[in-house]
Image (cartoon, rainbow, N blue to C red; front, side, top):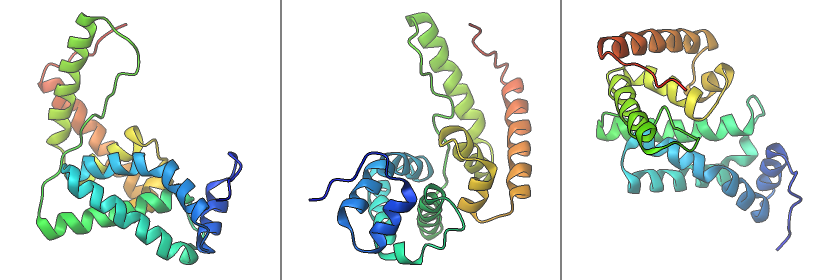
Length: 188
């Protein structure tokens, strides 16, 4: 099996995948399977379905690599495929979705801060769950997956202005909901 240098970019990996290079495909899978799985799981909320959809995503990547037009970054293209698979599944099964874990604590904290942080995350999740799906989705892609507005627009298939509008609305509504819940952020 050929080994690729660690600095090989996504575009080169996709290009090699388009030429049936399994090693390059495996590297793309290693880079993106975990974040795409978590994205799908947050949209679908069913582990086995998210696993199945992830496999569909990478089958589509293997089969569609030659059709990649380069209008978006490879990462964005992958998220777009995942998004489309999830939306198709949701439409087919009419499942409501929720955004989970918008806020993740990445630092070590003591038991009291951990309990307060957990309570705050629950409050945020409850507030986010009250938002329409299209607003949950932009929050997810921006804050969890760290995509830019342009990348989000490419993923969900709408103009950048629409993404900005949805984000603005989502943040205003989220702030209002949290205020009504008497949410107080943990101060360091």
